[in-house]
Length: 613
Figure 1 (cartoon, helix red, strand yellow):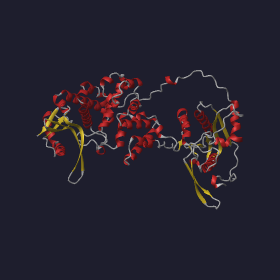
Figure 2 (cartoon, one colour):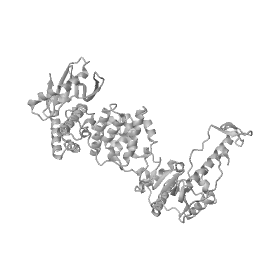
Figure 3 (cartoon, helix red, strand yellow):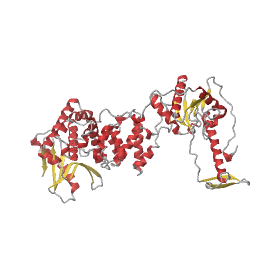
Figure 4 (cartoon, helix red, strand yellow):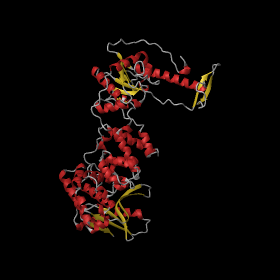
């Protein structure tokens, strides 16, 4: 034992189990030139070992032990590519930030929080929920670097240059993002981003149902950062890099972990790859210190700075002494690490390493790096195996065909068609409801008339926000099939959904064709559509209000509510009078205003505006 260098004497142990005929220690020697991609070859060999071990003993457990988590990246990628049916558990191994769906969420967050972030905006349009082709991306933004991508999305002349498919995809994304910007800072950050992701069709872009757990972990992280007041793009990206995929509950037969986490565990077959790898940078610290035992037996603190450049190279110093102690301790720790990895195996131990040829050496191989585990196994154990592998290696075959990297274009992964149009993704609100945000109080299935009111309210809101010029009558007519699908998704039958969708289209078209409707939806001063307000009563309770339409004309403030009811014109005035308390409650929000208030109910199905005197 040498405590000052971290050396521990070997303690012999006696086996308590009888030897098995099929037990073995196998060294797998891979010979790879510097440019041959040793990580890929090593991953293929490990996957072959796992398959063979599972074939021989399907019920036994297998472990892949590495010094650092990054040493498993190539193996996990190879399994995902070549053996997706192989279930395995990876303890804090697979980083979520490397998965495409999490990267897309980070892209969406960055784009929404910085409209001038051109790189992430282009990535957003390239993501699977939009899937714009490179030709359409170039037509949209290739010759205009002054305006933001968000501004370019609103240039109808520029959109006309895109393919029909690209135009449909961009219009869908534009409408969803317009909704997102309208609701920004009015919702919790997680709810806001998650709702936008859902409207874009994010769940449809996931390759497997298990990816929903990754998405949930990302949104939980966003929740924590928002609660701590630390939510910004850089912090979210950095923290996402520390998220790891949860262990597969059905993958216990094959486990991957670091050697340190395997202490105290046993596995029938253990595979130790990456023996040739080093960990940690071999850098010189500016200052070294340690407690050294002196001649009197007491410990003294020894501090030494880095040697000056002009100092003699062969002149010993306290820094050299401390550095040698550190190196010896690291070497002994490597020995213990290899010992721990090797003794986890019950039946079979596979040691996998890579070496490069070197004709100048006697054995034709480059010696292993000083800080690698292969260096410890080289004399007498690994070196003969690698020498035999080098001798048996067949000469490299001439390449039949070469691939020009510049000509390679990766496949575009995207939805076959854009998700449901943004106009349909509305929260179900009862026709007489006052607060569309109070979803918890809604029944599970709304009446057909209530769903019809929801569609008409949403359409009139979008027209008021976009402007009348953006909503020609022909555009409304094309939405009938989509509105019918949405109504069926709310639980209504096909016939009722078709009838209600037709009524909704007719009501909106009637509004756009009438003088009253166009005046109501025009761009007036201080105009708002579906504006959310809050107030407190005398007891201090908070009440929420949503005003369908509010604006100022000729010095008067109009407060208008929409009601979709199937009544003859003669009964509309009486129905409007029933809603007077609701309108007066809205009017109370402007009690401090000096402007005169005018209250009215608009009935879209009949195109009647009834003012309450």
